[in-house]
Image (cartoon, rainbow, N blue to C red; front, side, top):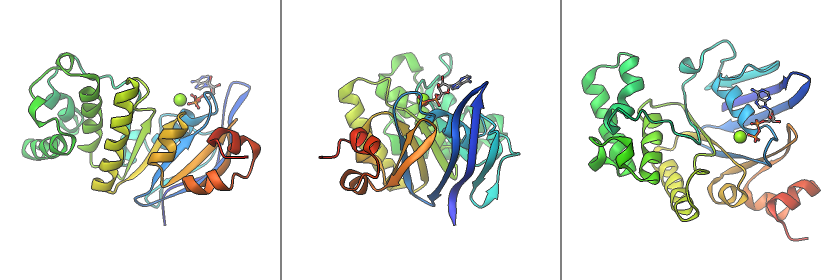
Length: 238
Ligand code: ADP
Ligand code: MG
């Protein structure tokens, strides 16, 4: 059974169609990357899965249940955006605990989850600092930590590395791969960076103009692109 199933998703903004009938199955534990040029609908599709955007038509199912009518907080997902928007007046620990505290999770459980996530992300030494005392990479880990403590069925990442410098981007790429190895949770990750997609993905979904051009393992897309667009975007040899 698919962990995330999309059926016939369409979405327009005004008269502009942005998603033109997207079908997709993401397997349990899979790392799937949406890749495509700016404006092709990657973020909109992720937001539809998250429940932040309502599709005009189509069905979204997560872990076997249709979630169209459910609010984002009831979908079993946690999303990390490109601008992490940490609360500046709160410590790292408070930032990570905030959502759980709101949900009235008991104190001992909040501490257990925050400490476990901090360990995984190597930020245990920074839990009492404010965000402004952290580097870009550390802040990014806190944002991921905020998602981990929710223990979601599915992580959704929207260009989480695009605000980092090139060297840090490469390092964080490996950290995402390690995180997935460790947690084995389903991850849906959006990027416009082909290299990021090729290194992280179990399967890549190439989006172009609101349609899925091709879905496949990185090597499969590289060696057997089905359209000229995929070949050029992935950089396949002629
Ligand atoms: P991507 O993430 O692939 O760059 P988006 O999903 O953000 O693309 O956007 C796809 C298209 O939809 C773009 O043309 C964008 O301008 C448009 N769009 C996205 N969100 C909105 C919105 N809330 N209102 C109007 N147009 C939007
Ligand atoms: Mg986007």
